[in-house]
Length: 140
Image (tube, rainbow, N blue to C red; front, side):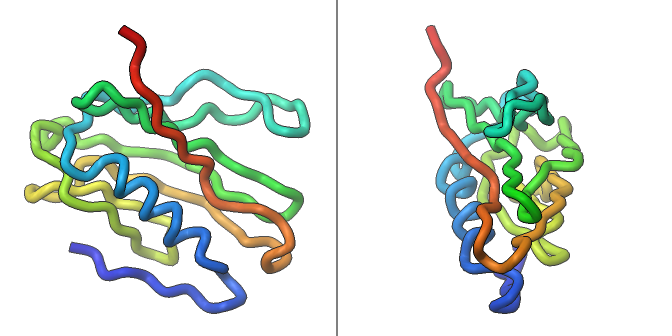
């Protein structure tokens, strides 16, 4: 549904496509039960930062996208929009547009969840960027 984006060699070292692949592996073939901001977390520098996006799937797993920042490099979820009329559809893919600043989690009926993402590789590629993505089982 969305063509793979290719960024210039000074804009990405493969981190952003790897992030999309990780998210795709976690959500494709499942339905979103809910999407919400998680609890605020401390950064590696000790200050409170934005909560991760928590996507709960129909298979009992939680997918968390945590912002990262490392000096002048960062990846940050600015906002997300869930389309509740489409959550009953199985996710068929994850794609991006606008230089990896708009992420689309989609089904056959269109986008189920859209993410607005701020990002910079900083001083190419000395600092870390990209979401920290984790997948965990929901407790019983």
